[in-house]
Each structure stands twice: as C-alpha cells, then as structure tokens.
Length: 146
Length: 117
Image 1 (cartoon, chains in turn green, brown):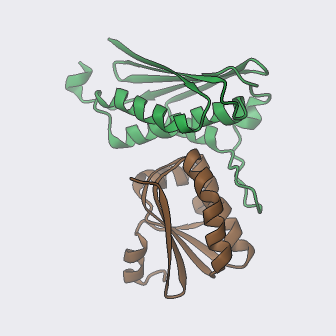
Image 2 (cartoon, rainbow over the protein chains, first blue to last red):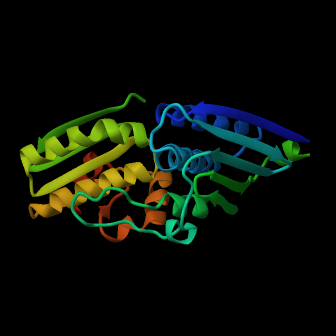
C-alpha cells in the first residue's frame, strides 16, 4: 500500500525543522532505525535549504514543495522549487569544502544527500526550478512490511 | 533540547559547548557569538564540545570549519569532541575529519583520559 505526505512551505529557514520533524513522524510508523531517521532528516535539511538559499535566494514569498511517499520499504522524497535552477549540475555535485579564511560555504549538501540515499536525482532548468528526487530503502520490521 | 552556546576556560583551554540542532537557523544565530568568543579569548587550544548537539547538516559543518579556520589563523588548534555516531557519519561524508581532530568523548571524559589534553 502507498502512503503519502505532501507539504508546501514558505521559503523560510525556520520551516526547515518543521519539514524534518513532520517527515520523520510520517516515516516513524514504519519502524525505521534511528540511523535511518537521522539520515532522512539530514537529507531533507539539505534539500530544503538548497531550495531556499540557492533556488530562491531567501525570497520568503516563494514556496517549496515536499512530497514523501512510502511503498513497502521504499521511501521516495521529492523536494521541488520554482527558483533560479542550477546552471551546471556536475559542478554543483562537486565537494568544494574550503579551508580558506572566511569561507564557510562547504558546498557539500549534494554530497551528503547522495551519500545518505539509495538513489539521488536532480532535475533542474535555469529560471524554471529544481526538483530533487531521493530514494531511501528502509530496513523495516518484517511484520509491518507485510 | 534548547539551542544555546556556553563557554568556560579550563586549565588554559577554551571549551565551548553547543546544545541543540546545528542546522541553518542555528548556524545563523550562533556564528557571530562563536566568532566573538574565540576572537576575545584567542586561546591556543580551543575545544568545541558537541555532546549535546542532536542534529547537524552541512551548514553546521560549515560553521565548525569556519571556526577551525579562525583559530588556525592566529596559530591556535581546534578540537571537536563529544561526537556521536550520527554526527560522526556526517563529518566523515564531508571529509573535514581529515583536517580537524575529532573525538567521540566529551570534554570531561577527554580531560579524565588525559590522552589529548
């Protein structure tokens, strides 16, 4: 059976925690491990902040869409914005953390999302927006899985 | 857990303790205060204890990396301690463990062990 959760939030960093906790609560009834819950929260934090900071450049009047779907033990997350899009996805996927003075943008959000998920996909067009599709396979309790 | 930063000076070490989630909101709120604490004291040994940090993302990693650079700039040494399993996982993904010394024990345990301090 498919179970779904959909949310639309204003592009405000204050809402990042709301999304993390709402999706964690949605997933928790499927008996994920604590590690899986933390992974999901981390993925969402990166995806939502990417939309707010890079997609919309902190424009609070814009919306970010979040969809979570669970079927059997497969969780699919979609985080979508209609912002400025990513010009060079390959470049954005590079791990660019820096030890230079005053440089605190680590540029590792995508690396984290990729590492913590089982499948990670970016669809993006300049001035159209970005859609992140992330799949995470949960190690569910067999009783619940059936 | 409530978000807050506290600091104390112990045997010549500046020990900063962070509580709560280290996400974008917290990073935004903490950055100035952390910079000021470090700038004001300029201790050679700075320890950031993350024992009470419940969540970290790339913005939190960026905040820690920024403080590493700040301390390094005046010739100091920054250590991260109290790293739980989840935080360690994120830190390892980002690769910053290759430049910043990290310890699982919190400051009190580290002090007792005298391995580092």
